[in-house]
Length: 191
Image (cartoon, rainbow, N blue to C red):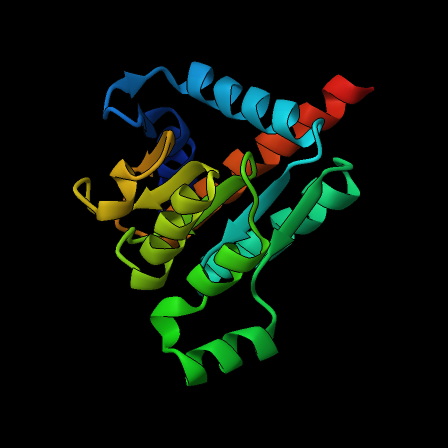
């Protein structure tokens, strides 16, 4: 059992440096440069009053909600996640689940906002539609995905963070840690 635990954490730790990042033209970007680019983009735009909008399903929804609070409370940035149960059930009932992010993004996103789309599989229709709505609205798009390297979300952002694992736990922990790195670095720069 000890070997299994050691292997788990060894594999998890290695995933951060194995994370692959591409730009909007699908060109590879160095890990540290990409995280730095995301931090600078978010810090610059939120200092001008723009928002960070987080979307995700399931475990990724909890990351989205968690990070919206951290970016707001700890980082002093305008941030929101569209995970309210009444919003989700209303829009699912009236339009279909594939629209639960597209509709609020069309209503609440503005030009210059940053949309963080988080999906382990990178295949969720509602996330993909949300990203498309963000683009139409003039949002900057950062994606976080995993599982298969050809997932559609991986090519939709200005910065695309792909975790090469088929384990929900590994992918979600890596996404969460990347978000924490971003907000913690922004907070540290403000001090």
